[in-house]
Length: 201
Image 1 (tube, rainbow, N blue to C red):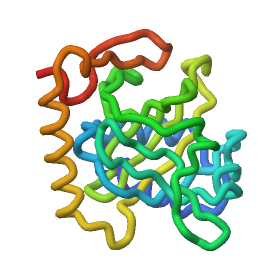
Image 2 (spheres, one colour):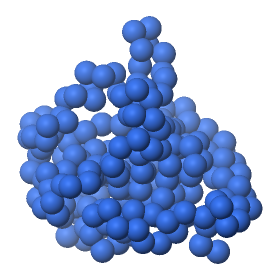
Image 3 (cartoon, rainbow, N blue to C red):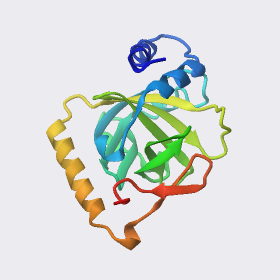
Image 4 (cartoon, rainbow, N blue to C red):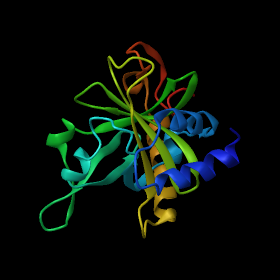
């Protein structure tokens, strides 16, 4: 599958009312471009592909809205709506928050959100300038899955200039760190491989 076909099929499946075959999502994923953590900073609205995964429907019940990446060190995986409709970061459900790393998954290094309080990795690839495809991976899940497949879209009204400024600030913050700020990143089977995005220069 070439990238153009992958993006077109992704959009069709995102709107599909009914079950989606994980194998087809895997083919789309393989054709998409990787992305760096600093390129995805900002606010995102989320949705899921209904593949029959145990998590399907659970996030919706929790009021999940999306994710916010304020910097590579400050990622909020579960932005939810409370009873009044206000958005908040559900730290209890997420067992803390998260950070962004560059992690190898299926032979490619791409932006990944690593949760603080549980062995969960959200891997991301670029669909277009305003859309990401995600695969949630959990320690102990075999290479063939099952995985939770989802997507993120730039939040309506998100200020791209503000997002860009945040990215520059984050890059400066990361570049200014020394020894104690350098971290290694988890591969999908729990091994340590590589360095946090922005800390390898």
